[in-house]
Amino acid sequence: MQTSADNVLDVTVLDPRIKHATIFSRIDALKSGESLTIHNDHDPKPLYYQLLNMHGDAFNWEYLEQGPEWWKIKITKRLMGEGSETLAELTTKDIRNALVFKKYGLDFCCNGHKTIKEACAEKGIDVKLLEKELQQTDKLPGATRALPYNEWNPDFLSDYIVNTHHSYLRKMIPDIKAYAKKVMQVHGDRHPELIKVHQLVEATTAELLEHMQKEEQILFPCIKKIASANSSGQKPVIDVSCSIKDTIHNMEKEHTSVGDNLHELRHITNNYTLPEDSCASYSLLFRMLDEMEDDVHVHIHLENNILFPKAIELEKSKL
Image (cartoon, helix red, strand yellow):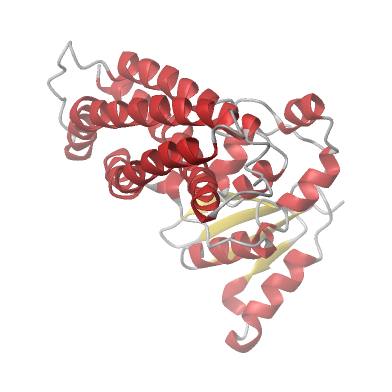
């Protein structure tokens, strides 16, 4: 097996015309567990995103040196079958992995602390098969370029969540509630499970709206306050009624409640399978519920697995 000591590529000496091809040729030649260390005179971050886009989570990217004269990066091909990373960690590295986890019914947001081995064992899934699919996420339908959520500051990520996920829910919830009621009234006598669907929609959307309001009025302003103080090198004035850690604990419990409701909705609708006598409104309702579930799962992942840990660490460092 090669090591980084004997597998080094000095990018600065390569002809620009063959630089790209040479780097990826060396990377593609790596076997599981092998590493390539590249030397460059600037941060090759675009290479990282290109590698992520092409191969997903198949490689680890480790900075050995970060300027000002040299950048040295160790690129290691992950060992297959290890399964030691958690679902949350893998989704944090590349949000497109969520598409694979959804396919197999794996919870990467509320219960993302489980390792691949643990999650696969519970569901009876072949670990190697799952890891192979994780390496090909860029080929999945609906896959887009992964955004570097984990590199964003907590205040920026808070704004992104509000502007993207909170806005989406506030726009969709009225329609989802209206169609859940309409479809129950028209088809509930033949499909009594729609009564439960309507009840769950009402409960879940009410909880989401209240939850988002608390985040926007209480938690996120606290996070922004402490993040701003950290950026300016100042010590924030801590409001005893604004404990980030305690507030986050309550938010996570509410996430679990919403996640359980979404799981129940999927279960009683048989994965949103339409009956033969369904109408256009029936189909639209199921499609909107499926889309809402996808959005909420990403929403919760960004908070539970990225924003909240960063916020807690910030608060701890400023106490």
